[in-house]
Image 1: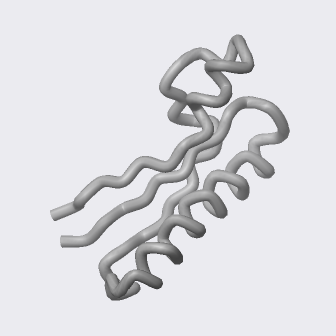
Image 2: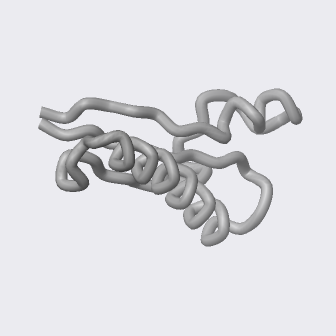
Length: 75
């Protein structure tokens, strides 16, 4: 069992930049969890970019909702 931190972004910028931003967002969270004593082999960071939006990116408020990190436990 391990934790997966999935980073996401809004649709502003290129696909490549959003992928990098979302990966960095998840990596920062992963680094924090590791600093609190969770073994590094028990957490994984993934960046999805803008590919898995929660809501439409049609407003500033919605774009903010799409810039996030989700934590899931994987068996």
